[in-house]
Image 1: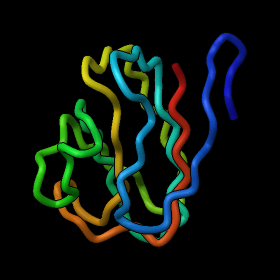
Image 2 (image 1 turned 180 degrees about the horizontal axis):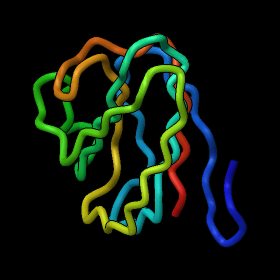
Image 3 (image 1 turned 135 degrees about the vertical axis):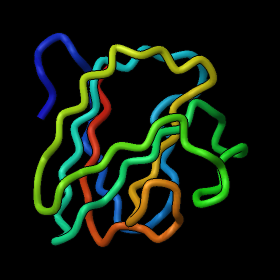
Image 4 (image 1 turned 45 degrees about the horizontal axis):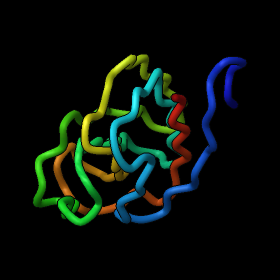
Length: 107
């Protein structure tokens, strides 16, 4: 999935588990999310350390709606100062995880 000039690895997400994409300051060019579920799912991003994130309790830096059975490319060009943690859930701030989604963070 990754484009030339960017680095990233696709990660399968099958629960509300938080995923650590980066520890420390990182510039994210874009995020590509594939939602395999038949309903809208949400990518919750957090500019935080993993220990500081409780999915469903910690407010996300930005949630993104991912249409059912679709792939969404999110152009960011954003710096996460503390680190990048994410989760894929059924609501924009909840803690119920997606059945299956793929997330690729390109830096």
